[in-house]
Image 1 (cartoon, rainbow, N blue to C red):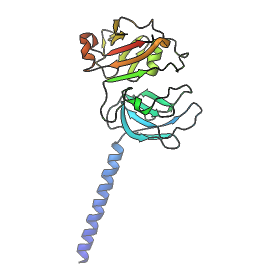
Image 2 (image 1 turned 90 degrees about the vertical axis):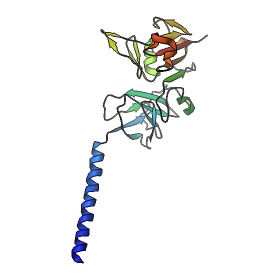
Image 3 (image 1 turned 120 degrees about the vertical axis):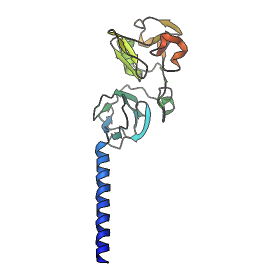
Length: 228
């Protein structure tokens, strides 16, 4: 009887050690991104929502503004949304920490407007839209490219070159293939002459929605509507 109890105790101990080892190994293999979110006065922002590639993670910041989110797959964009401060995004290139600081003049966005901006709970969208209400401070933007870079999620801007993340943007013989630009519904070869203050809305299309415009939209579409 004593021998059976001893064997049972040994088996239980081995099972516990094995389970602990497997859990520790699983935790070691997991990748996490941590950071802190504050306002322009360095005050922590709590209950801000974390998005990975425009997908809701159900992770929110704590009362000190800190967050920790598990990276389950390769991502390229990290965003944070606060009902009181708005939306910020940052490119992800393998960092272990990303800190967000909301500027003093950050645009307020209602939660229901996230869908227009391309943020979903489950699937990554192919369309995003920003409606400008004329209340934003545009004095910090020297041109339309700086404005798009700062205000339009999922778009990469380098100088006067724009590409849509998630579209089939690539570099061919040293020249970056750009999306099709439509201004008030008409295709244009450049948008450099557009002042940020004249823009009413910007819409980004890719994948099946961009295919409506044919081969010219192989790398996506950026539709700009000007104020009347």
